[in-house]
Image (cartoon, rainbow, N blue to C red; front, side, top):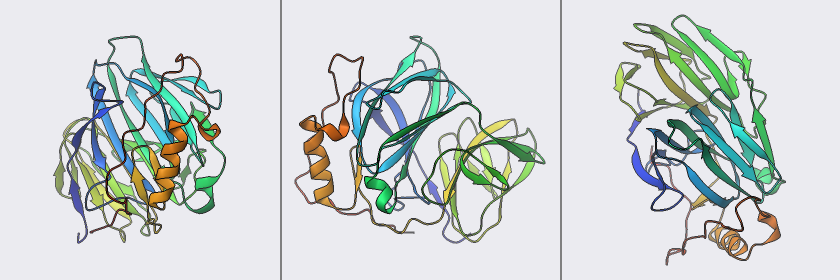
Length: 298
């Protein structure tokens, strides 16, 4: 279909040059967002531990979803939660939040996703919040079943707090099945191959690749030779300009400069994450050019 796009992953170290390597498909140079989704990192499967020291966020929600392994989340709001497969962590930064994520149990298998949702309008400067959701709603149809992480899939709605029309779901496609999964025609969507090859509307998608699906369709056909997991994201096209740099989302170069200065000066908006003896990830130097909004090319 016109407007569809294959997004190849690129390798990025998480938490520093010696950090866990992740595979990032969004943002893409041609596509900054899918709905309000603006960031998709796929980590593992790997036995490398995750150790991400306290770091800040502004203007976004973090969505953390493990398929294997456990992650301890701590933040400046006082949250201290161990996240397990089948559970969801959703953190809303508002005007500022800081957190850490550390794998539990040493050299255990780690596999999962970290995604960001851009906050619209006034919510991006609102209060920070954290939700741990251990029980998520399920749905399905012929040849497929799903857990709805955020937003709505068909008639099934997640209890997670969101700020724009959205969907995020983990889908399992049965071996040999040809599954027609419902979509909202006014949404744009993307399908991420999590653990193997899947056929998406007639196009093969291999491990870690993502396929963008333009609006104006009410289903997507997914086919797999064996039981296969994919993640479906989507939402109403996000019409606000975004300036994204490091862990911050703003609307201008000045927004980013201000957030960076506040983090480096340990400003109150980011608080302190207990349990790390004051260790944090310092902000990298700003580029020598003025930061500009990311532009869509599809």
